[in-house]
Image (tube, rainbow over all chains, first blue to last red):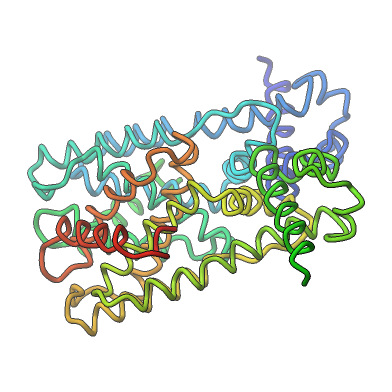
Length: 215
Length: 215
């Protein structure tokens, strides 16, 4: 794709995501997207054909964000539980700060009322967390009675519930503090040996010192 | 209210809740509710005036369900952590089996697109869980380093995330198994002394033997 066409598509995608987040799918019209992006309705139809395709493109963009982020965290030279904690903070920041991720999040919450059939994010996240917990098991730091699969499911429930509650209570403003408190409860259950607080500190130090893991 | 008027309002409420769950707020019309309930549109306007009021009535009915359920569980003559676990299973069953709760759940997920301003359920649930954890603390069975408030928040995140993920992955069919696995992760973090499995068994025995705590 030409550079200019790519820039146009990106600006349309971001304007659509912002409106989907603020007004929902049903409450957003092509002319709203045109007004916010400063592009003509003709350009929108040319690049995306219809609103449904824009919603799908927002969701695909969100789903494309995660594999690269997961890979960067998984490849880090730190213990698996620290990778998991650092990854969770990166994702939380994306949900708080990234307009496309936020738009995709509201589209997904209202997915049953969107015409397009939107993919579910949970299977992929469960597999990612299970793999990291299995890695922690091989490192000998996972509580022996913990099943990586069952615990991986539970971690994903807790993490996505955190997003819902945090969005409802304070627009995700306190999501990092809430995530910290969540890990203070979960880590002692996962860790064979005590040390939740120092693990959280190391994960934060890793995040602060590694470009590309911020969000 | 007369008995017959009450029965009419109830049948309208249940029909509306079922349609809100299946088609969402925007996808449900007064004539759909009329067709499903077998009552005239005139009756609907007479009793509820508009669709928005029906949505509010469904939500109010859900919110009215919880205090009585919480009270029955809190008054049970069992340890606080068993009350909390038993309550969580009662609520999970309501989300799986009760048409009004299910309708309210979808309305709430799509609340930003519903005209009426719907209340948030989270503050009330957080206070309930914090109170039960404080009670467990007084009973001397809570891990000393656990803060009832922080842990109470985290339990509510995990529980509501469970509902979202369970709804997305299998229409809540496996919600009890998933909840069981969630408690197997959370209880060892909450309990000062081991015994998650036997606590879960006792909570289930209590649920099975106590009328009015089923859902």
